[in-house]
Length: 156
Image 1: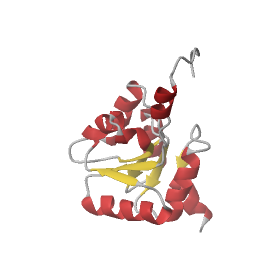
Image 2: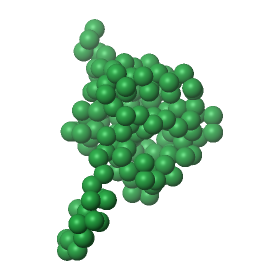
Image 3: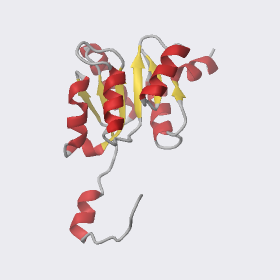
Image 4: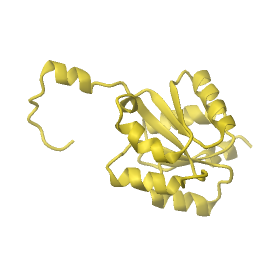
């Protein structure tokens, strides 16, 4: 981080020490949100869902949003485009790992997602093993690109 000069009191330090242990899953399809919640539960990860991208920035600025470690964001929702949402987040300085969820992963969509500011891409549907790989990626090598297709290829 930039700048030092730690003049924070013990009380301020305690309020800043938020545990980032939560997945924020954003998808306009109720079935995907419910499935995602079940996957997170199976992986032992707290999960919050939103049904559209227009509330993501507001949620992340909220007290509860401070606990979000990973964002899973649908690429195409009725009201918002996932690429627009991630671009806006990056513009406002949000550097959390944000992974695109899409029904079709191909090299063109991967490149477009990388350019928009996503951390990686997940082909829907995905299971607990992909979710665990995303969590590990987000907490380790989130400066590298993640693709669930590479995981699928290795299992063939």
